Length: 156
Image (cartoon, rainbow, N blue to C red; front, side):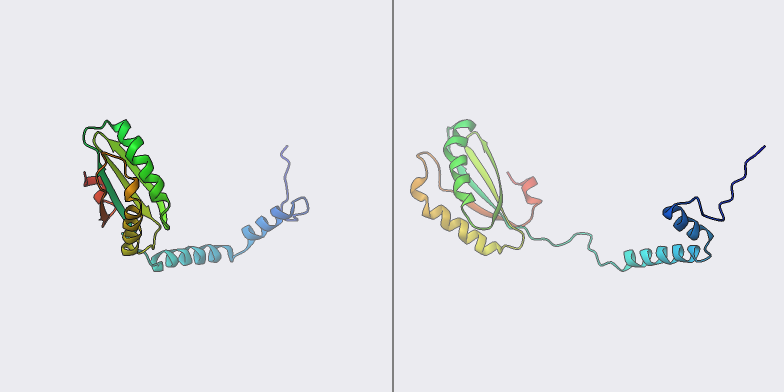
């Protein structure tokens, strides 16, 4: 024989079971679900957004050359000391650097919202103040502002 269970009393259900049972039995549940879905669709449609937001991240290239030196020597004599100086500039968020045979490139990324012109001025001043610390064989730094993040992929 089959045992029949009567769930209508709700006596053996816990708190969560009683809440679930009240939603199952309520005629307003379907209306609440439809209203929630419509509100969600409305919020997504009305949410302002841009496909390509215009976030300006000031970035500056600092290039020095050391003709005739191997990449390891360039790193030790030019890249590392230059990185230490660049980290002292207020507003610097990150420094990407690379050393290759005869040259060193440091890409200085300033914090979002920093003014590009003032960032360039700070960087130029820091390099000029430490001109006497440039090791023998290292050229004067070539400093160039990046207009767009994507230019780093094509610049050599």
